[in-house]
Image (cartoon, rainbow, N blue to C red; front, side, top):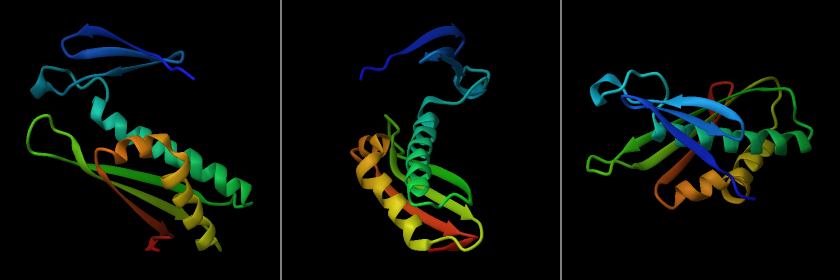
Length: 141
């Protein structure tokens, strides 16, 4: 399946992005000549990773009949000092909240996403170390 993104220059450092019928703006901050009218491209990689793994985990847990929970995924990246600045380490923190959550099923769902289903994870792992952390009701498991 081929996907296509059209990135069109607007002004200063801003670009309109069209992806599968959805539009959004990417931009740089003032120090780089932009106006901060949208996220930075590298930050979108982190969002893509969180979204990809999140969709996998929710889908897998649904198949395991685990549906009652809250989930936040925090993805952070550490950049190299030299140019081109790339993420050398990415940390993905799955933060679940809810009553009587099945730890083993949550761990299995996250692991399956990480090593089998999430294409974004697989691509980024070729360039950076990806660390996975899971929390249930504030406790690291």
